[in-house]
Image 1 (cartoon, rainbow, N blue to C red):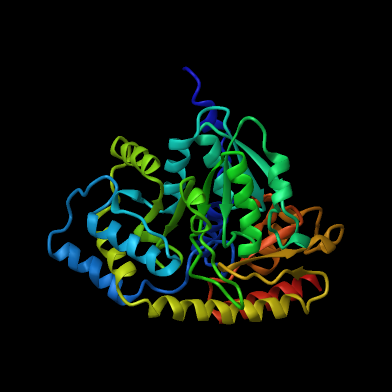
Image 2: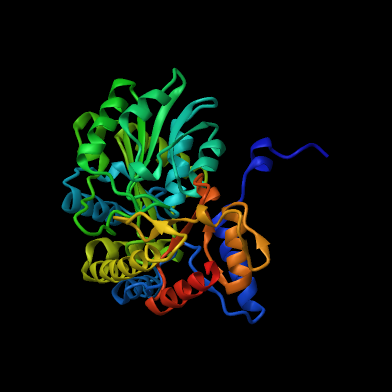
Length: 395
């Protein structure tokens, strides 16, 4: 038999998906597990959004739509971007996809040729690195340490540029760090992108989940030149608790949007019509549920940070967005916990799961060795018990 694709056989499976699978297996075996490894809101999808999906089914709105989504949904997305960030997009510049991950992948496929380099700040969401490779590109990882708030500087970005660099990938607010860039931090990055004529893929999926004094400055809003080179990624999964509905989108300059539309027409086509109807209600209907969920995450975030930073042997930086934080567990290396010598973050997460049935994701999966990611999209009761078990484990 001839070999399989080299790209396909070299792909790393998603670490967060692997954690979720392990948790489900343990629960199926009757084990009580406290899971903070995934990235899925625990809130139900708001009722008005669910009813819009039900109404779509009952009214027979169950057929194909245009490859890039219905005109009504694209208009609603454009309206939301205008209201929230002052951005102006025509319907033709909005591309609706089967989740945010799909929007990222299609954008990369339409912008990269084999050998093109993409500067990828680390820590990064697990799928970015492999998506770049799947699209034929080469990820160039640049680490932004905790002392910088896990945020890349303009000097770091410029130092990574080569003649092969074609794109800068920005995730703001960040997963797994919860970092939020200020306008003063974004503008120098934008200047480097303009200087070297780089495309920018700006993933702002968590843009509605901002805390304290932070502000989401949407990257294409910085200037017209940046607008013309940026593909903005967003969707309904995180802010509207609609992960399973599978609706993401890209907002892009017309030539890029046209290429993405063509790509979709020859691959997946449009997302499900009923999911589009639900997303239309999400974007155009009342937004109070989003704020209620944000406040809930904020309460959990504050409690989590206070508890963690009061424990001996672990620490965390205060996240300003999303619903994740990175816990520094390097002080645990060399210790024996639950009968296991802890040599790295993978050992720590495995021992914690086996001993206390608490699931987190090793930081190595995000190119952040020495850390573990804790997702606080869980109930306060679960977070309290999870932290109790973590504290018992490290003692």
